[in-house]
Image (cartoon, rainbow, N blue to C red; front, side, top):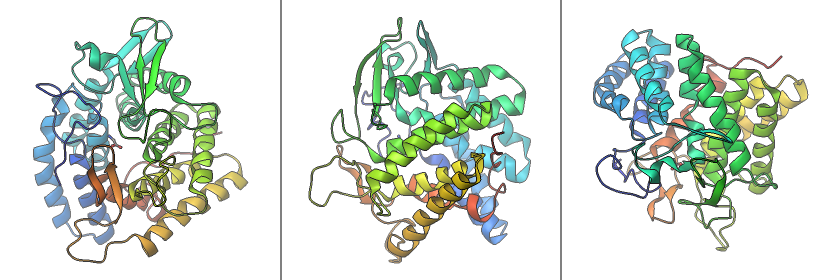
Length: 352
Ligand code: GLY
């Protein structure tokens, strides 16, 4: 599936239109198929596809290299031990680290566009939280703590600038690049600037859980848990959220990908929590969502091009609405974290 890469990046032209951000997810799905079936042909398909994805490792114009290599080269190396994929992911991590903008109030990873373009430097999206686990991976793999420093400063500044008092989040923030003051909070893919884009919370929880795992700092786990609790409260016992919790339509379009990715992240929370009652709670939710996805949202029609039905890439742009999306299917497969802990990617250890 090919979709515009720019629904969030907004601007167009050389160095902005960088190709789609989900090309790595297909590789991840093939690797998951290999782990599930033991059939080597899936590794061979994944290897062929990686040859095409590899060129993105040298694209320094987008935070999306995190999404791309975390879902492809990192599990490839984890599963096969082939150094080629380690080196590729490391190159991508170097590019991502180079997107750090240092201000007086802290530092953040700029989301889109060339770094010498002020429109790129001043903007940050909540999605970037899902890219910083690549920096934690690189820090651990190489022993170079500067990757981790960049990721932690991004997480700290994002938490301060994106989180509203009611534990919902802005989709994007425009910073003053010198002082680091938030000039405005706004949205590209949500209903309007103030409401609550359901997939965005998942990206934030994903990055905060990774930050807690990398640093051992309980405060990040608490924030991740509190955002996830708010999301579950907004979900209100359903399985799949609306694309934006504040869409006033009587039957808003749903986004199954938001649920699939939140489920994958809740597995992380269940692993990280030191308290048994918390582990039981998060594990229960991490199992409830995929089980509901299986019974209500699994595509059985051969004509459907994905695993899950009723995802929503971007409602405001009318792109991928009521559709299959590659990232939804990828995170749904990441439920392998429940079925085969540690096989697909390294499993987080419990905080002390
Ligand atoms: N760019 C990430 C998303 O659409 O969720």
